[in-house]
Length: 172
Image (cartoon, rainbow, N blue to C red):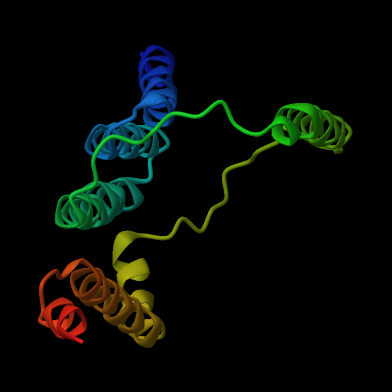
């Protein structure tokens, strides 16, 4: 049953990622990214990482994607224009990607002990993880929330139109 669920949600994750790249409208891309994030949360559940799955849904599929969608709608982004890309990207880029992937595959295949995963005795509970997060790592946690707030305010400030500057410049 785990294998069937894994294959189903891994395929859904890959399909969402490919759809994300192929969409021309930003809102559709954001919705595809929500599919990817939710599929990853189910994969985390299959691995037994319930806290990570919940954080994936709450933080990424919830808050961050709402922020992305809000910014896309605030900027009134329409359809993107499709181009064929540059000639340099086709002649140099694609062979470079193939070479890099071949090097990575060779390195990964030559690593000793690949696939020898063992279960450790000291499994961290959600209570231990939350205690560390809200005591020792409280400052980075709060700094991250302030940075997200600054990003929202920056997006709103950039998207504002007609704040009086255009009339003042046109009058000169």
